Image (cartoon, rainbow, N blue to C red; front, top):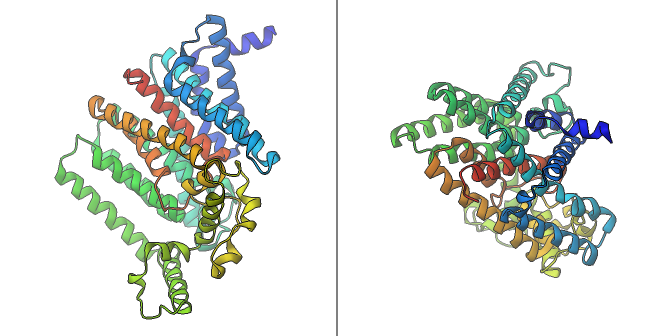
Length: 429
């Protein structure tokens, strides 16, 4: 017991160091960041019990997330069609509301000094991006991992895991914003933005490249220290670079142009099959494009599940077993199953129903609106960057990984934790 007391009775810098190690932990595997999160939460509880200060538990945002967690528990016991699959995601969701108030507690205790967090993030990201460029030019990364994926997709230190782009869009912009707020050098910031944009497209993950571009454009659009001419020039340069990479890089061209062209041909064949040969591709509806896309069958399966379980869904992580029973159009039914629907809204609607979807949507809306409102008053670019990431994760139509997997969830809720801390700092929640 004395050993445990001595372990948790430490300075807030120790726990902020653990937050700073989260990106590195994610690169090495999700077990490490899960352990780091558990230590942060236990350290928070230790200090809260020792100081007998339970004020953090009374915050409205935290209480609302506890209500969300209670709903997930209710969903598990009464709705889930496969309790073994749903158990961990339902019960252990509690770690994210606790992570939010734990990180804020230690940031608050350090007088909102974020230096240690962003220094560690910066080191991890610089090494990671260098390694990705190395892998692009030499065909293997600095520790020998080859490019093994089709179309030259880069994975860097993650080997066979295609998650590096998601990691970068989750941590790069808040880190760049932190250093820009310290030195105010617009040219250096612009150069790093270019590097970030280039590596995103060279990684060759289409959806995350689009989301990363959205984040950059979102920040440029709302950044109120840049006049309209500089904003337009920046947009022009970034768009030109994107077009150049897609046009002149064979692997990226294959992924961003030829695959989309192939999907258009699939759509054309489908229209012909259904007697709509006179229609051009441009006349086809958005629903036609979605239906005959690579993820269309998953979307239809998730929607059919939702139609039959509107209020409460079928339980977290159960799409993978129930998709085979979903009714989808005959011409796409053979490809309807996957481990998740590859779209955030449809995943939530199918697995936790309309009720759960509304709870999360309320949370997203409140966090985004409060962040933007606070940014315009305080000019905190870190807050704007964090908000941009949250917005990128809830974009409709674009494919996405599962919102509830550990990797995605840790990145998302770490960003939310920093938003929460900054809103507390500015007394907005």
